[in-house]
Length: 325
Image (tube, rainbow, N blue to C red; front, side, top):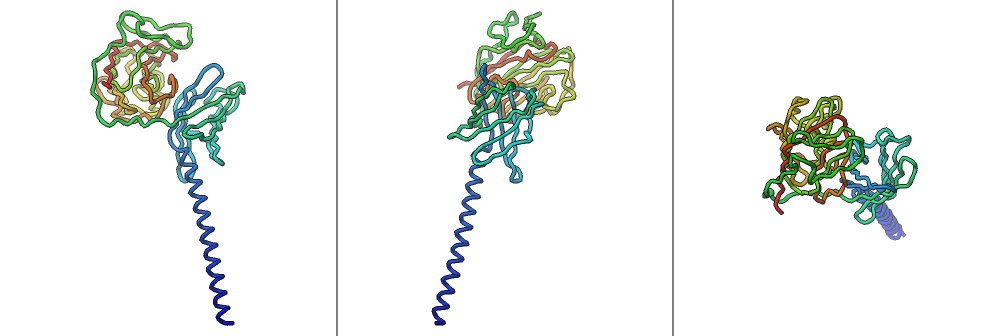
């Protein structure tokens, strides 16, 4: 009888330990599963918003901080900004761009899921019309070796708009005056016909007082030219990559004077030299900036000059040296 009791107790102890181990394994598996589901969403995403009349490029970065999901976004326009609302529940991602940033009466709510390697979801336009949106992982654009540079190409002939096209609206248009391209102020953008991957770009510019323009690299990353944004964040100032990278040092503004940029873009790493002084030294551009032509960062793109902002900026001597393939 005593032996039977001992055996019974041992069996019960073993059963209890096994049950506890199974329970802990289940919890661990559930935790791992949850972690893996979150990890599948983390990182940078190139988004495309599909409105009835056109497509809008956008960008999203998701990360975890202290166990909480955080988001940064470039919407249809403007600069990269943190979002106050982002959540992941049962495989469904929700993030919210506030109405103040979207110039609409209500918040812009995005909902989506991971379909294979793509994000796919819905939102609504300002009038409540359903919009579809998709997202693909932003490419790293790492380069295994330094590029070999090809022959310089002049982008502007000093006479007319040959090789350029205007896109957008406005009552004033780009024009050529005294051998310079002059931005219209609140007019269309000016886009070059050629597309490039890695390159070195030399451009000379003269920014009028209280004026704003910019040079878009591959049509996606804006190097800011301005004399009107002193009260905005440093990345919005002259020579910064809008919303992402600030010029350091920031050089004094010189309204009405000719200046120069020498810009090198390799992958997503950029160097900006203003008037012979390096102000951005081989820094990574995380994603597209507001006003980008598209969000397909893996593809070559054109140089384009911003004409939709106020004031007048003149350009001359634009020479690009592409990397050889």
